[in-house]
Length: 139
Ligand SMILES: [Fe+2]
Image (cartoon, rainbow, N blue to C red; front, side, top):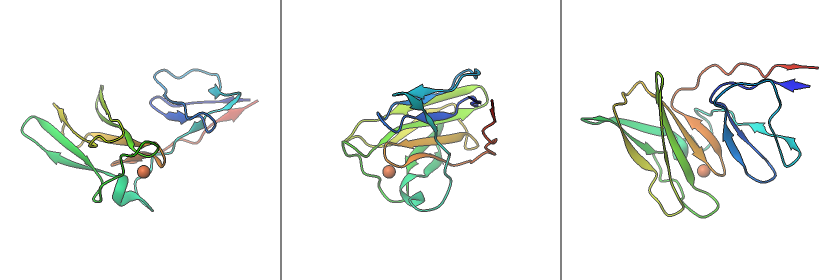
């Protein structure tokens, strides 16, 4: 069985917590701890959106991204791990640690950039959910 990935898709191992992002699509199945890794769906609304969705403000040199209308926890086992901003062929990521403040300015980016946020407990969130192509399987 072959499970096709998509470029920039994020996968997580449900056993050890390993998180990866696909840079180049291949044919194989991504496996960790002996089991297929789970693709992380990009969420744009629903429960928890008020704590996870990126809020984007224009600045003089780019955009500032702040997470949530309500402050998100930055605890040891539950925190915003990274914010990724992508516009055209440029992708910039800022990572955070527990105790940090999940906000950052991204120079040269515009308000129409796609922003993704990864929470260690609640997964992947975005300001612009794109059509997710169905995972294709063949034997
Ligand atoms: Fe969270």
